[in-house]
Image 1 (cartoon, one colour):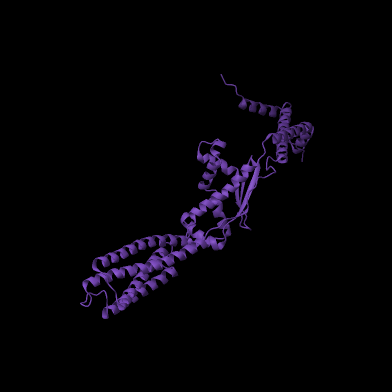
Image 2: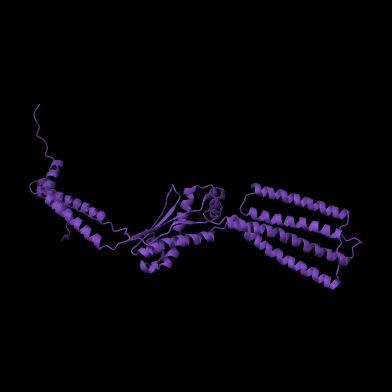
Length: 399
C-alpha cells in the first residue's frame, strides 16, 4: 500500500494554541493584571453597603392552628388543611406576608423610597425594594430572617425592624380567630337582647303605673320562670349553633351535639307548656285570671325571658372573650436588627478576582484572533475567509 499525504489541518491545533498563548503570555499577563487593578480601584470607588438582619419565631403549633383557620379564608384554603400544615408551610406563610403588597407599601411610605429610589410608580418602587431585601426561612429551626441592604447602617436596621412591625400589624388585622368570631357575634346579640330587656322592663313598669301594683303568686312565678328559662336556653343555643355553622360543616360533632341539645330543650319546653295547661297556667285566658292580670303576666314573662337570655349570652360572651385572649397570635423577635459596623459589600477580593478572570478571557480571545490573522497572511484559504468576514462586517454602503 502506498503512503498517502496527510491533509493539512484546518484551524489551529491544541498544540498550536498552547504555543500561541505562550508566545503572547506577556500580553495576557499584562491585560489580566490591568483588569485586576481596575477592578480593585472600582471596589474602592463604590460606596459601601451595609446589611442588617433580624430573626423572628412564628407562632407555635398551638396558637398557629387558630390563625391558620383565619388565614384559610384569606388564601382560599380549607380550614382543616390549613391547620394540618407543618412548620415549613407556616414559615412560608409568614414569608409571603412579609413580601405582600400591604407590607411593602407601608415600608415605602415610611422611608420615602419613591423619592429615594427615584421611582415614578409604586410597582417599580416595590421591585427596587425587593432587590435590597432578602427574606428566607430556616427549615430546621423554623426561624424567619429578614435582611436589608442599605448604604446607611442605621437605616438598614430601621428598615429590617420595620418589616417585623408591619408584619405584626397585618397579622393583628387578619388574625380573627374562631373565638373572636364568637365574641363579636355574642357581643352583637347581647346589644339586641339588652335593648329588648330594657323595653320589656319599661313596658311592665308603665303597665303597673297605669293599672296599679300587681302581685304574682309563687306558683305563677315558678311556671313563668321555668317556661322563660327554657325559651331563653333555646334562643341561646340557636345563637351558638348559628355561630358554629359559620365556620363548621353540618357533619361537625359540635354542630350535631348542639342540635341534639336544642331538640331536647324544645321537647322539654313542650312538656312544661303542656303541664302548665293541665294545671295552673298563668298564660291561659281562664276565668280565674282577670284580663288585666293576664296582660301583666305576659309582660312579666317577657321580662323573665330577656333576663335569662341576657344572662346565658353574657356567659357565652365571657367564654369567647377569654378564648380570644388565649388564642392571640404572638410573633417573637429572636434577634432585633442593629446597625452593622462591618460593610457587607462591595467585596473587594471577589471584584478583583472577577475582573482578573474577565481580563484573562479577553486577552486569550484577543491572542487567538491575533494568531488567526497572523496565520491567514501565509494561507490563501484562511486569507480568503478573513476577507469574507471583513466584507460582511464592513459598514461601507454599496453604490
